[in-house]
Image (cartoon, rainbow, N blue to C red; front, side):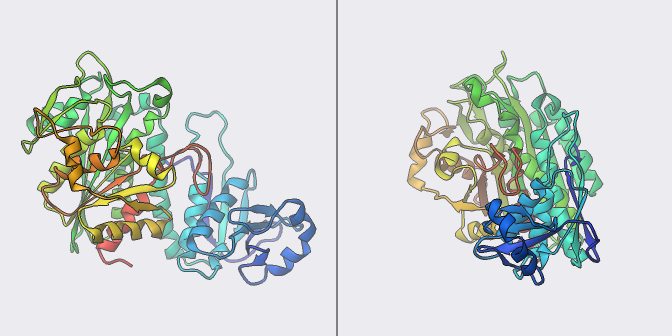
Length: 474
C-alpha cells in the first residue's frame, strides 16, 4: 500500500537533451506560453490541425519534431497548469524521459502546480495488476529545487491517501489499516496511539462500537499527534474511517456497495496530511482522530431504534444504520474538543445529499464561523480543490429531534447534508469547527484532470495547506 503506483517521477534538470521529447505550454489559439516555443508550434500547424489541437485546457498533441504541446486554455493559471501537467502525465505511455519548462509559465505557484499535476496525473494503482505501468522521468529545466521538494511532499501525501482508499476492503481490515497508518506515521516521527475494543469501551467511544457491532473484524481508533517545538497554534483533524459500508441492517442496494471501500477517504486524508505536515515541519500542533470500522449487518448489529450514549453524555437514536458516519465522527469530535485546539476540522464521505447538491468535483464546507469557512476555501483554492459553503440552518434542528433521545441520526430526505452537520456540531463543545463533506469528489468515476479512476485523496492537500495558513506559512 505504498505509493509505488506513481508512474511519473520529477527531477530538476539543467537543460534539454538531444532526442528527448520536450513539453511546451500553449494558450488558446496555439500561442506559446513560454519563450522560445512559438516557432515549433508554427512549424507544426498542419499536424496540430490534424490532431484538433487548439490550446484548450488539458489538450495534448505531438509536434513534428517529436516535442509535445500542452494546452492551458485562454489564460494560464495554477489550476490550468495542474490540469495540463496531469493530462500530459496520462498521455506519456512508454516514453522513458521528457523535459519541460511548463513551470516557467508566468503565474504564481507554477512549479508547485506542475509537479503536483505530473505526479498525481501519473498515479496508477497497479498493486493488483500483473502488468505494471511504465515509469517516466520528467525533468523540470532550471526549476527551484526547494519548490519542487515541497510540491512532492504534497503530492506524495495525496498518493498515499489514494493507495489506502483504493485497497480492497478485504485487505484493509480496521486492525490492518490502523497498523499501516501507524507505520507511515512513525516514519515521520508522529506520536501514535491505537485504541482496541477494550480501550474504546473504557473510554466510552460508543458510537464507533455501535457501528462496529455487526462486523466480525474489531474496530480501532487511531490517534496521531504532531508537536513542534514552537507551535503557532493548534489544530485537530477528525476523519471518517468506514473501511466498508454495507449500510448495516439498513442495507444498501448491491450496486451502491461496489465503491464502498472508499468510505474511509476522510481518515486516509487526515493520516496522509499529518504525515506531510510533519515532513514539512509546519509550526503548528496537530492531532488526528481516526475512528476505523466496517459497517456490516451481522447478528450483533445495531438495530434501527437503538440508542447510543456518548462519552459526553449526549444520546442519539439510530433510525437508519446507513447514516453511520456521523455516529463515529461524533466520537472523534468529542475527543478532539477535549484537547481544546484552536480549530477542529472533520472530513468525511458523509452524505449522498451533498453529492446531489454539488456533484462529483466539489466538496461542501460548513462551519461555526464564516472566517474559518473562508480559510478552508482559500486552502482548497491553493490546491485546486474546490469547496462550496453550505449553511447551518438552526431551525432545521427540528429534523433531528427524537422522541426518546437527544437527537436522531437522520433528518429525512430533504436537507440531509445540513441535518448531518447539525448533528456533528452538537459534539464540538462550542469550539471553532469546520466540516468537510467530500462524498462527491472523493471518488472519480473516470479519469480527468490530475485524477485517475478510483479514490482521489481529495481534501488531503487542502488540510496540509490549511495547517500552513494557520501557522502563518504563506
